Image 1 (cartoon, one colour):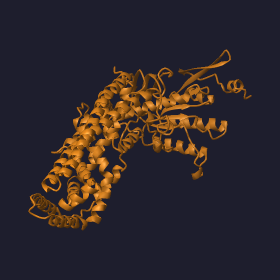
Image 2 (cartoon, helix red, strand yellow; image 1 turned 45 degrees about the vertical axis):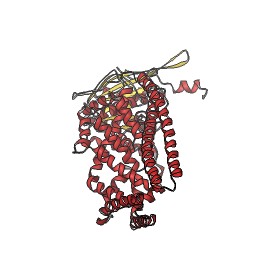
Image 3 (tube, one colour; image 1 turned 90 degrees about the vertical axis):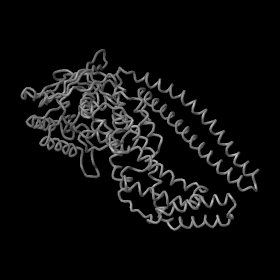
Image 4 (cartoon, helix red, strand yellow; image 1 turned 180 degrees about the vertical axis):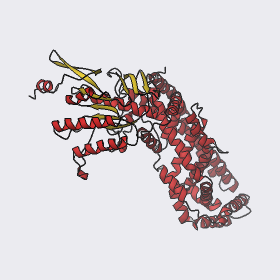
Amino acid sequence: MNNPHKFYRSQIDLHNVSLKKVKKQLAVSSTIRLFVFLGVIAGIYFGYPNTQIIIGSIVIGITVFIVMVNRHSNLSYTKKKLQKLIDLNQLELDVFNGDYSNLSTGKEYIDPSHPYSHDIDLFGDRSFFQYTNRTTTTAGKNKLAAMVRSNGIEDIKRKQEAIKNLSDLPGWRQKFSAIASLVNVSVSVSTIRKWLQNYVPFVPKIMRILPALFSSVSVIMLVLLFLEIITFQIFLLWFFIGLGITGSQLKKINILYNHANKVKDTFEQYYKLVDRIEQGNFESDLLKEKQQEVINDEEKASVILKQFASILNAFDQRNNMMFGIFANGLILWDIIQCYRIEKWIAAHHHKVDQWFEVIAFFDSYNSLGNFAFNNPDYVYPELTTEDIIIDASDLGHPMLKKEKRIDNNITISKEQFFIITGANMAGKSTFLRTVALQIVMSNIGLPVCAKSCKYRPIKLITSMRTSDSLSDDASYFFSELTQLKKIVDALQNDEYFIILDEILKGTNSKDKAAGSRKFVEKLVRAKATGIIATHDLSLCEIASELDQVKNRFFDAQIANDELYFDYKFKDGVCQNMNASFLLNKMGIV
């Protein structure tokens, strides 16, 4: 069994050593660049007025300087990646200590109308999503959110194998996350998709040939100037002709640049992520299938995406005023890059959707693999087709610390319904959420917080937390009835595990007891499976009339004038309540 704490600490130490080495290399690189720059200045100063020495110094200096800049950029990227890897490992240690502050809450996904997500704290502060999510792309985050609220029960075994496979590849997962984290992507995938699909080329056909011819002539003119065969005035005239040609398309070039500049970072990030996927040594069938979607072509998707990223970066060089002026005057730089962009879009835009989807898939599954790695004592549910829906021993809530968590056994069969009673704070609601999360996690393919677990896949629907909707003129009671109606309607089309917590709270106790009884009877007639928690002991009488209904409870004991909870799930009906005791204990009455 892996030791995640030990792994993360060792990774921090390892990356810190590498980071110190890279920092020293960067310092040397900066010094060399300074000397190259001073060498060019010296060549121009001492070579004046000799044209050959000046031009030679500039050309050689610029060439060496570009090489050094590229080397420095690579070292800077390595430094940032190492720092990001250190941050990622420290984040996991912080999470183990209960600090979630640097994790996204996923509050934008909160939806009170969802069949279960609002009831079981799936999204929001201190939520299961916040605890699990390690995605580094917006598309991956959206996909992970969609997965945990999908309520799908297909291909669970394949999902389990994929998560197991990724949990065994912590180094691969962290490098994937680090690469993605280094680029701040501000444009959504849907915006990029729309731009590529709707792009209309503007570069005239003659412009696809003219830059090559013009550049060739410019090289010749530069050589002639160097040999002093032509005057500088003639060379300057040719230079302004080039600027004039580029200027004739400037408005359209600027529009294209505006779009290209927005997506540049995304493609810079995504080609590196696709490269990581292509290099992955996966064993899971599901992961291999997704991997093939980016390496099936004659040319790897990473190479194609890198080519586009390089074109966009080259186009961005126009922002360097000195380079932009000289490059457009001598080789029609902007027009060349526009043509290259249009050529790439025409050839590959139809594949981008698939490549982006694969990245989002691996980004989302990265989080699931990380979750499994962080919880080596969790178990993958054994999937069955038997009548028993859940047969779990030592089932616990994954968000509670192990040393404070009280685990319970539960066995519930198809078409069986549990009525759970218990005193306030005895653990009923926590247990309901524990069972609900076990179902959600099992359906995703995650290991669950249990010693052992057999599970017959089933969809989940709940009614545990209902809110008023004043803007819709809906009272609390009507909102609750609406949710119960959704449950009844859902049962007509599919099989669900139903979890209810103190239903019909918006009416008087007598009406509530009668209504709750009728609703449970209706669920039983519909052959539903599930759990209902209640304080109404009269509801437990149904168990004596219907074989499908079983009574379970959480107890509370008063000993030495103190309230004691054992949080254990037991057979029978709770006889001890604590409201009066607590009112007196706290001096309220």
